[in-house]
View 1: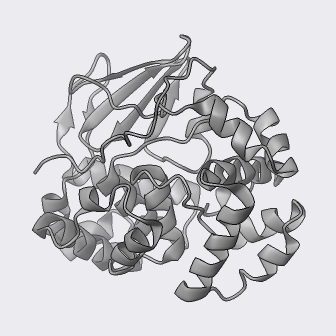
View 2: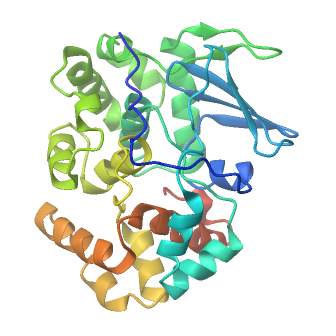
Length: 299
């Protein structure tokens, strides 16, 4: 089956030469299948085993499969985006602290399964589960000094037995993963078609997937479906917003139904603008860093 990576949006204009902080980007709750060896980072993104040399500026990104995807979104006009979201004082402060952090563009299927698997879990457990999924169902990919396992294809996970998925540590999420994979494999869920679709349409399409709620759908939209106005909302963001001048908005996040979630999302975009997803990631990373070790809790 062809890769489910979504194409880069044609609205991205200039390639940024601004510094990219690889460590901050990877360790910000966006991705989980990465490991570090000095200045070298290795990670799995769908059908790509990726190596990043962080000693270079910009970082050198390579893939065992040939041309590497633009995982750090270097095609975005990052200068204009950071200026736009810094209209908000709390975001401006977070940007100043984390200027080199970037949103990471991900393979859409891997992103979907990742955030289904992340529900009610913690960072070490999520990483362990995803690594076991790759080890059990992913194809081997050779690399210089690194034998990787790619992320499993939709078909492999759709045909996986319950016992095998359970052995990966998915727990109650195992049937959700299997059914989501089956939807992608059969074409009932076309992730490419959702790329860049209006927020409400993409949200509606994703909410039809077992194990996907509004927050998971927003994560998938932001990190893999080119919706830079997606703004994942959860208890952590409620705390962060409450502490950064958005107390009224945070109070509206209690007991979010899909309808209320959409209403709050509209307010968020009104507050932070069309690149609200970038604002969310800076606020989230800064807030979690301030929580001193709270990365052991589900993002």
